[in-house]
Amino acid sequence: MAKILTGIVVSDKMTNTVVVDVQRKFQHPRFKKIVNIHKKFKVHAEDGSVKVGDVVRIQETKPISKDKHFILLAKGAENFSGKASAKEAPAKAQKEEVKEAAVAVEAPAAETKKTAAAKTTKKVPAKTVTKKKVTSSKK
Image (cartoon, rainbow, N blue to C red; front, side, top):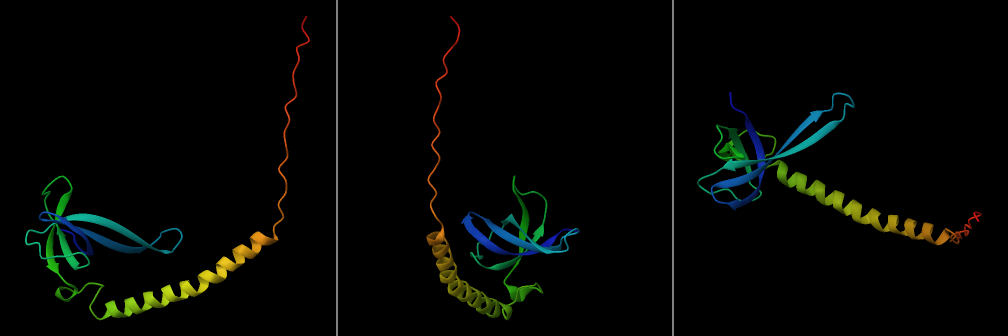
């Protein structure tokens, strides 16, 4: 049984080849935290119909070249029942915009705290180290 994965096209600059970024989520066995893992695969796509940003489905196959061992199955989120769908994309974009706006609001406050801390710290002069001359006691 060959692996079938879903990912986003990251690069389409090569001839008959695209680079697909596949994201995998799993729970860490020890820390029980959800971990995101990204892996890039080179995929054989002869038709050249896929562009950067497209959601695609890929299947493992025999090695086509040194790095290329996947083929393109389907293009677009509507062709399969993957995690990404056309309905979820606008909602995700809105959530990201809200997060960016929140970060933009918090950033000036953080900068003022840093500048206030820098003003309150006193500058301590550095200690000067003098070398002692060593004279030999041999005669």
